[in-house]
Length: 481
Image 1: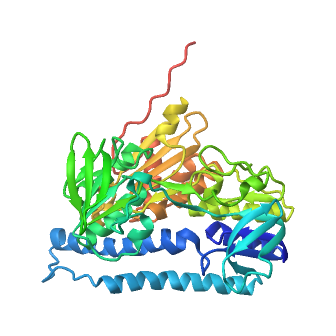
Image 2: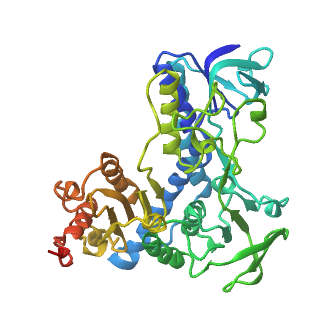
């Protein structure tokens, strides 16, 4: 079987590339080992985790009404874990079914198989599905590599027990353990820790570094760290190493080495969330001209082309950041490049969101990156305690931060922590990509009372004109005669 364009991987990058290529009039085949399209994001990542985080958020809001607003409920919520799991699975099923229908309407061929490269223009297809062509090979003119990533699991933590989980296992929601240890204070660990804590588990978080979300802006992390410490009842331990994990029968025994936690302890379940690694091993890339760097990422240029003229790479295999929306955009670029259009990935701002409570989101340059690069920026912060909307809904622990180039007055970065930060960051992405000056933000009328006003208000801080807070205007620098 021959197809001009083959996409290896049916995740958000893969199916976006395939659908656009089909829309451009090309004959397209997707090779995907899973029974449905969607990839990690839809099947065992972004979507199911956000569905469960919605449950956690509502539980949290009910607790807030009880404690702060005088709305009293007679009993604690009863969790029907089977129904919660079924609802989560229903969301996944609905979305995967929709993707399947979209593929059919575009005449995109789906082959359920594991694909590996025999050479630069031929894939070997393994599996027993009826969609695999006779002979088990598929030739192509162009292949878009979109195999994604998988959770990283150190060999020392791989014990013969389903009580030790990665993010995939945690999302299966087999039960609500009385005690859960989360190894790793990154976004996956904190999101899943939030879910299980609100469902009733006593959650403990250990992080090897000296702060949660290493690499994220510390001003944004502080409110989240405080909220997580309260949610976990003080069971967050930094600068702490997990020495070993062993099967203790009905529990898992863990050893710790850290200033606040040392020795042995037992947990009902352990979630290992220390990052993800790209899926590039076992694909037969050595039979092509594709180059892989020391971290396992495929080397490609801004047009998503690899060193092999027949193969392009997108998404998690193409390098950081490992984000679904980046994969989708790269997939569209790859399809346009194959179609002969002048297209390249030249984005200034790729938003990142941590869907905890409070949420954290940022785009463009961060304050840490500016310091490391020796770049001078004006940092303007607007505390949500000054926002009427934040006061009304009880989310005064948030803040909005702009980074402004002092010479051009252009906005070069933005960070937000607080309720709905992931929705609010889109305005900042647009502003940074368009090269807006800070007055473009402040001169745009924002609706009142909303949290979106804080983007305008943070810009007004730059000029010393923010109504709800007082910050003296900056004095002009004196020049010598």
